[in-house]
Image (cartoon, rainbow, N blue to C red; front, side, top):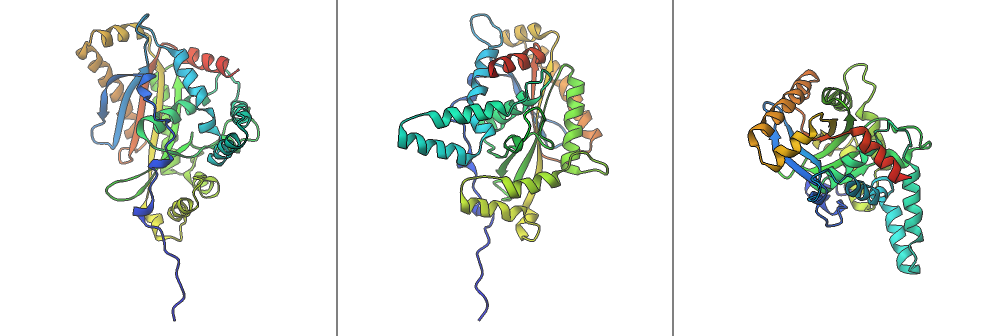
Length: 320
């Protein structure tokens, strides 16, 4: 009699939609769309154009509102699902929110207080990926930090989705770059994604270590789902051939004539806005070609700011 076998999960069993923690809220309450999304010609990259949502009274970006939202996401972003679920159980038993207060404080302390930190970009990318794209986060290395003053190495978070046609597990390697210059942000972003996904010789960042972390520390808080998920990451499993490594990027930059853009959006000056989009897209396409990423599926969020440093400073102040 042949030995009993354990059923191997297949693509149809891997469903991730229920892992999304968007609170059922509309993320567009905090964002304005500058233009419809752009599919970059001859690549597999889609760019979504946003800015911080403007208030109707002053016509200026409501930075405080967005930052308040990001602060509310600290637990979801930096703590494990089990920690959150344990806090829910504690609340139900005791009626006290102390467990959630402790988690919020723990998450807050994980952030560095450096005035040049890019961690607010990582948190912003989490918000965009999970709340707009509905790609749940499956690895945040914040919880692995032993020193809040040191940035986590590798990807700025990993999100996942399932291709509805092929059933492939798509792992979206995240990179967030908030720089003064668009060109510098684009170059650094796609250089990092190239190292993570393509692993050229001498690469400082590689997906191998992040895959190991995913196998060891991905916490979906669902035993059967974790078993299925890890089957895709096990090189000895046939499902490991059905993993597609993708890119996920946030590119934020200072726009010197931000007020002019504000007027163009308010007056719906399509020609002027399209000219900007065309110029920004050309820079992104050039970087994709330079770093040999034209064949990789990449979701890009591109956001102009009046001042990236002012946004970073406002977040650090609110973080306390």
